[in-house]
Image (cartoon, rainbow over all chains, first blue to last red; front, side):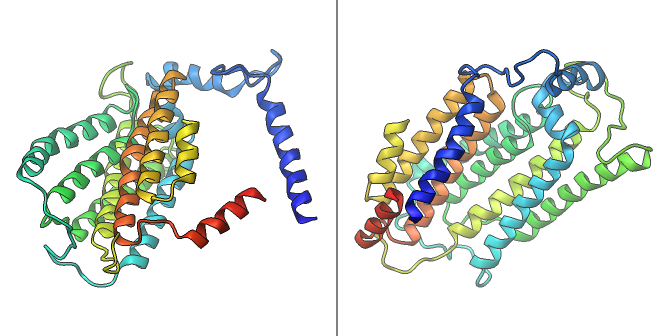
Length: 241
Length: 81
């Protein structure tokens, strides 16, 4: 009886999902079938180029039009990292405390040392140019976190200061919220643009978007580095396979 | 991609299963790129391929590598429902 109900429910949900998506060809974007309703994407695309002078439409939607959602996402990431830390935190770790099966060879350590600065540079490039090219705060932050991961894997004595991570993360979060609140001071709404937008395809353009993305990039990088560091320092039972 | 997904579910050695999920993410990011969504492709490549895979591998190192037989039967039953 229970299984029949589950199958029935899945069939109903599947039918309506398929009904919505069956009319759209693979890779097409025609969600609105009739011409009478003007979809919101046209307004977004128009506003992006004309008013904000941002060439990456995804960035302008994520940070400007839907900036409040992004603040919520950043908060969700922060909460999950805090939960992970509170579950796995036992005592303060020391350098060389980590359990390693075998230490890395000199080729790996030298290569990591060589690759670490370019990875950081790539991450910084991705989030600074978030409003011009594909990418943004989240992507750049994750790239920086993988750079730190490389160093943590190659050097068993490599440590990251938890205090520095929390300071960077808190400062970036406060920057995001303060920029949002400054929209109120200029007589607008939360996260409204108040800086001059500049010219299209310029590095210093788009008003508050680059500043917010740099803040998000630092925040995500600090959080994910903290996650990797916490998980990596967690010693399991000594019955490894 | 579908073959990798089935392999990840069926495989008993969790390390191979994690690598298979990484391959799924890699192909998915290529699909995103073909569908003209480079932002999402970049996110998927960074998070799905690199970060998630390595966090899972660290977790496997700290726990057990082989999937438990009784646990697996339970999973198959719940999947077949």
